[in-house]
Length: 264
Image 1: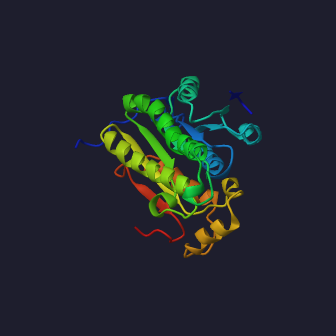
Image 2: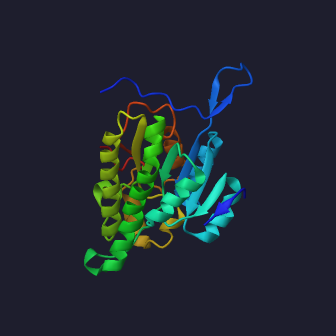
Image 3: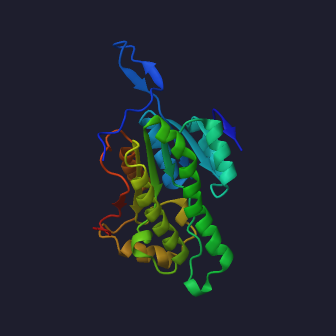
């Protein structure tokens, strides 16, 4: 563990933050920093590993101290963070410096029951982490991204946000909100060089689903033509592309990774 703490033309190129290529002495090697929330397990951890392999300096943030400590040694830095706490989010961004790539993977499933049985606290907690947490981190990194003229934000939404899953009203509503937030901010930053997209996985084999009722998981898998759970690494491959220079004319979009469940 290195460190751990509690219509216009094409967009302008990013402000240079790198070193000269020793092979030719002229081309600039751009060094980029990524922040992955929920980065200590599941999709977030797979994304953090993939972006590290892509050559980015990766900071992970997570609320679970145990999984954070286990994952921390593989990345530039690791930080305990409650994404629902806007002050803590702002402090973290100030601590780690300019963020070039933000991946919002922090989230919870929330109450797994009919909507009439969901209490106020469970609803509020799901919204606070899944929606407000995503808003908090985006708001914190966007000013510097816009100033530098380059940035990539990828929000992990869900097929539930497009179709709704029974007995997961809070989760489905929260992920629909993330999709809407992505569309809005993608338009706001469309001429700033900052690309904002979302990914909507079907059910993925992650620890987040360990406490989901087997009947609910079976229902979700039954909707997938490929007939299986997705893998975190499959999601990470898509996020890797969305975080790269290869994506220049697509923003505010939600990319499905659902084994054929969503075709629209």
